[in-house]
Amino acid sequence: MANFKDGVIRDGSTIGSGKALGNLKNGVIRNGSTPGAGTAFGNVKDGVIRNGSTPGAGSPLGNVKDGVVRNGSTLGAGTIRGKVSDFTIKGIEREYDAEIVAVNHFLIKKFL
Image (cartoon, rainbow, N blue to C red):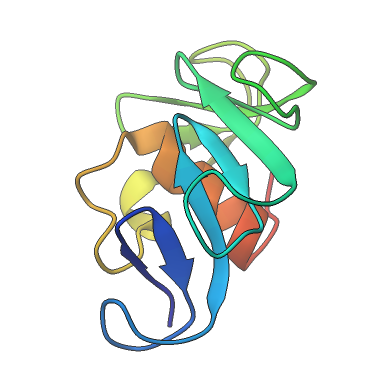
């Protein structure tokens, strides 16, 4: 079970425990153990999840609109992959919906 605290995603069952899987800072998901450190896996900008290293750069992988996750390249387009609630990890509920989904995709299990 993954959890999120202070920008770091960990594999422990309680918030703040476990080995660091990566981090989220300013819409960019990285593999480092502190926010902003490590190699970028992907980013989120305006509800679209991309594989680039800066927000808005890279190929689009999916999007999130009104709590629905889709695999299209523009907001609201594409095949439905689920709801944001299907991809939420403990402690990350206050982040943007697209960031929640992107963290799950890049650090937990690829699905887009």
